Image 1 (cartoon, rainbow, N blue to C red):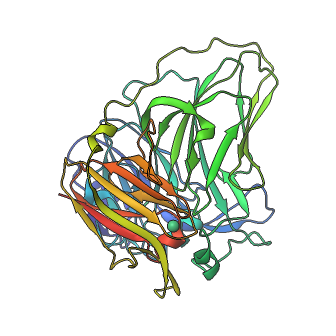
Image 2: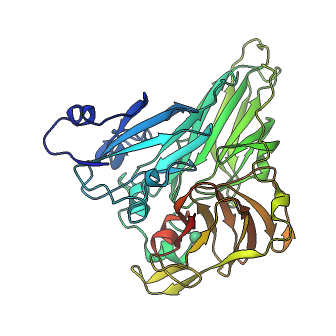
Length: 439
Ligand code: C2O
Ligand code: CU
């Protein structure tokens, strides 16, 4: 529903919206604001939700409905996409596909039925290369019915920024350089908007650390030397078997939830979460263990994925759709990233039947990285370069490396027209987007 904002205070308008069932309601106001980063001595003009960098953490319990009223205070249209949430198609936040863009001064109410507990995030899907980069993003947590007894539940939203010397955000987006490479990589990496935050823990604690890659393009490959960090969920869904953090590449869009027990003899130690994706290892943040007596470690079983999409469902199925990932000259920015040599919105689209397992193949015939994301669905990676793989989890985003080919399997469950695209914003904006229709 779109309402004209006019001169009325927000509360007045909102109270006139008929709410069908009792639900939680929050407001997100995309706006121009200034932010004081701790590492600059001048403030930085940003675009933010509610004046916060990153946006507020939204929380709702599994099985409830969260209403998010978005009042656009920017000078350009926007929308919000709830990355990873499987919701009504009309709430998916893709202008031109599931809704009209929210014009400046307008209000759009998203009603999100929170059906699956997990870690999600939200961001615009309009002029996204610029809007995300200027600061519009935040984390959405759907809490389990029964709270898991971790001693701390911590959110680390990873991001990077391309700042100029004077603390301003470099104001050119989807540049030739970004398009020739793997999009816009920044020169400052932040965690929740801070550089190298320190998390305080005590010996014996068992924490849940939710790590989200909200960067425009940067890819992380993390390590947490000295601490046993087990991945318990990927892209919001529990894994079927936990595994080591070092084995997961976190592309833009990906999330992992870590189960970390602080050894009882670790008093006084500091552990570093490092990124090793590029040649220069980079410290993202640290976990500092206080020099105090250990407390007992909570013992409990992690929720495990049920039989969401057993790999054997896809045995002997032909590939229903192949998308070649490459680039052409032309389009809005001079270089266009393509799926089967066509640019959004004239892309080569696909349609699949609800309930019928499909195999989809991505063939990267370019030397660049493409984290491919599909809205409204989870999928399983079945093959990489012709070799069968069995990941103990499902995803909504997977990195297809240079010259790599990959086969994924998914079972369409939710009716609608869902976007599929590269999550490197410059690639997507220049054309690398399409839709899959589930009907
Ligand atoms: Cu984070 Cu279209 O997605
Ligand atoms: Cu790409």
